[in-house]
Length: 189
Image 1 (cartoon, helix red, strand yellow):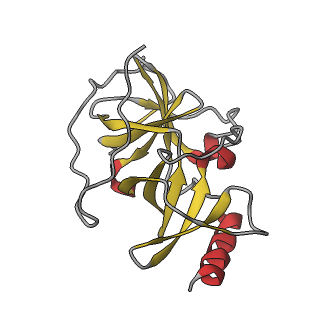
Image 2: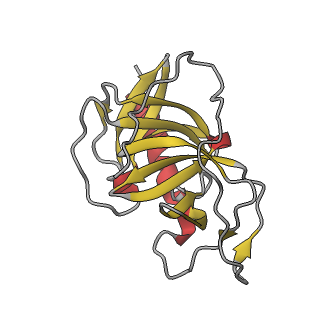
């Protein structure tokens, strides 16, 4: 089993994430369901051993978990809010949001700060791997049979497994957005 790198915080708060291609793109077999998108790079991470990715344009930074304030009476995936350089940011457990069994957080639990629609959120994931190059990779549209279909841009086959590319605009259901806003407004100091 290949050794995986630990997540490292981004050095400068406002520095752009400068990716280097770290994996060769893998072509999917041609399919009538293949889709063309302008996605070129994505941040790849795992949850429960499954590969996921977010488009690099949506990711602001990656950090290890920090102290957060729990928010009660909200959607189960919204576990709290954190203070990120003076901004109150909703903290979402991506496992819960995607229907994967919860697991306890520890000091090395990574957070992916990403823009979902117009909102900056911190997503709790299991492990962040690398920025991957998707240039030339054919993504297949997700089957409507997948419970995750509404949260995905597409699915790509890689040598290390299937990669589910999450849609940052469709990741948090519209009905949950007011809950996130209310929690953030109610949680500000």
